[in-house]
Figure 1 (cartoon, one colour):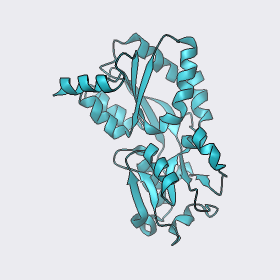
Figure 2: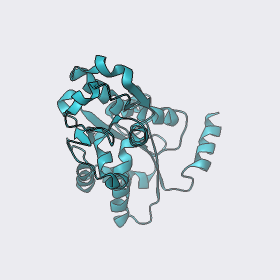
Figure 3: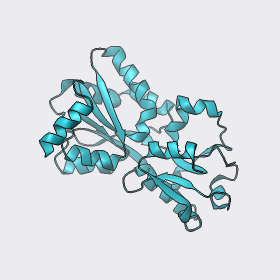
Figure 4: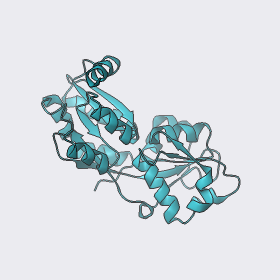
Length: 248
């Protein structure tokens, strides 16, 4: 079954690519810039990326998905793969994620306290069991002491990327990756900090230390090693910082 899954995955995604990457959904917004910078010096290396909730990507890798590199939304998921012999390198931190609250329908000038208001019916967060940003959202509500007043309003999205989509389409307000605020598609909304979005105080949630590994599948892929080294380079760190990440 695992061989069938792997072959099917190769046919659907990334067959023929030099480097196949599984990345947490929050990385989507910075990835184009990262890829562009990498390919300035490596134009002959083709890259494919599959985005999703980190927990779901772990399951895919354990079921034989042919990924060379895994860029997770925290260290726990990469450590899990390393402990179970699905990684050829030890997990290291490539960036530290930041959380934001977004609404195109509500005025967020009162900050998190806005969420307690009766007019707020739907709060979107990423699935806290599969997405570290979702867990950080729950921690934020708990530490701000408004979880009990807001928990019935919470709707879970499969990933932090889907949380953004739901926030724009239907939800009154949503917790998103701060990196999403730099996405081109959001520019048309002319968002204002303090009104349409707020950056969540990092003291309200545990640090989102995002980890990277080369998988066991990719251990002999020299081109994957090049991309891995690039992600840990000074140039990549500058790009992550430009997209709202913290660099530990």
